[in-house]
Length: 350
Ligand SMILES: NC(=O)c1ccc[n+]([C@@H]2O[C@H](COP(=O)([O-])OP(=O)(O)OC[C@H]3O[C@@H](n4cnc5c(N)ncnc54)[C@H](O)[C@@H]3O)[C@@H](O)[C@H]2O)c1
Image (cartoon, rainbow, N blue to C red; front, side):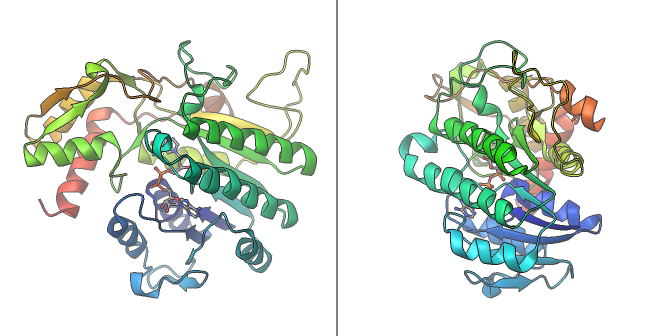
């Protein structure tokens, strides 16, 4: 099978592409390689898959020098023509769309980027799937779509009409756009609501990375909502397994869909959304203790109020995922955090 994976200079896309290649699939990776965070980390991820930095040029496919079935292209998804040309040339079987402007807090200061990279880019991807049909379009949504919902655990059958950040609104918009195209053009689409993903090669703007950096420097870590937070932290390998299980199973119409009582998580169209989360929320303080243990060093803490746009808790209901794929994320937090700190200490030669 031939896959297009977008966001492969990014955290999750890198891991997903790697796993697809390991199991023998052909992959074209795509990323704009922007500088939202340390660009060296992005190029290091690319290099880890045999894509050398000096060969990366906008709009040109680069052959991996270590994996014959891997090529990479630097493209901006918000520009349609080159993307259409790529789809016409490559004839992908499956698209796994993970590129986006991530981050809740950044969306308060840089709203326009979210329209370009999450809305216009999504439209371009799904338009390409319309004119160059694929067996399945899988795309990243986010647990943030649950916004100010307090009913736990969060279920894909819950209403998600109360986003509290533009980031969340952009992800919810992707789900709506996907449904429209699944209905109109019979494109099988599956949206995956990821719950706080962490692990080796992770994102420098996320808590685990920031905590690790600060603890090693002996600086205080910023602990929001005075530590009174619970998160369904999900280990990267679990996310990757879930993405592949779902990708292998194109969305199909729900035969039991009742238009009188419409279930937001499925449809008469070949459309589906799933939560992918550990489904066992961890207290932020326990997460911090796991980092301290992994580093063998105590954290100094700066207790702060809840940040605008942030939610105090998240908990994924994953029964649909388990029913349809037989798979449930389950890496314990201590094990996952240890893998991260080991990677961090090795990567940054600490
Ligand atoms: N990491 C998490 O905890 C988490 C949680 C929920 C949802 N998600 C979603 O999962 C996906 C992957 O997240 P990640 O953590 O790997 O983020 P990431 O920032 O590491 O990776 C995203 C990549 O997309 C690329 N990109 C951004 N705009 C682009 C554009 N216009 N054209 C082409 N490429 C572009 C960036 O350069 C980046 O490398 C995103 O859609 C994100 O919103 C992540």
